[in-house]
Length: 149
Image 1 (cartoon, rainbow, N blue to C red):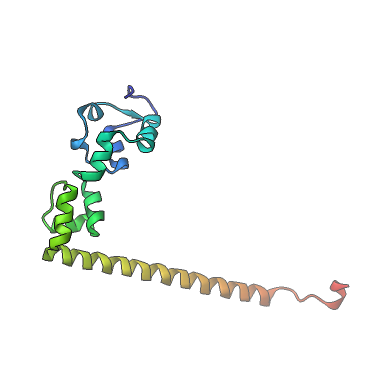
Image 2 (cartoon, rainbow, N blue to C red; image 1 turned 90 degrees about the horizontal axis):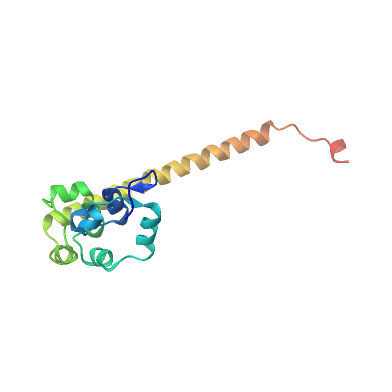
């Protein structure tokens, strides 16, 4: 890794962008800053340790929440405070404890409401645009037959 310069990132930033749990990374990674070129290389050609972390974890809370299809707050409400491995996530998905069923339903309702609000905003915008177009047509000066000749 490279010494810190204006085009380098902290290991925590890189871990977040890569979707990996920083404490599970090699010490060398944790102790150095990463250039943007090195970051691009990690994304394009992940070393074995990175591929293994992505495959089996432990995964950071945002990744765990995504895999369980719930919010990060839902993880906290369910008592999940630490990073989970892929096996632990799979076990939760297979056993579906009541808190997870509840949080998944809550997340589905939140997403549904967000989509409804988005659709309503699009509908209002389309209605407004149609009214503006109609008003512009109505207010436009009428062309006479002479203008077409």
